Picture: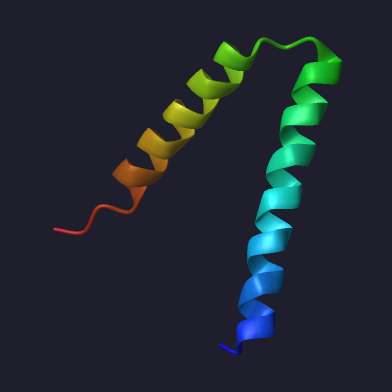
Length: 52
């Protein structure tokens, strides 16, 4: 992957993370709820991607 594409990908991820935090702040949902949702989603993805 060329360096400019990689840097744009990193920029895209950072902007979307900021947009997500802004959307949760505006909607009044506590950041702890967002953290809990992220942990649950990560656990579900971990269980689904498990290869034995």
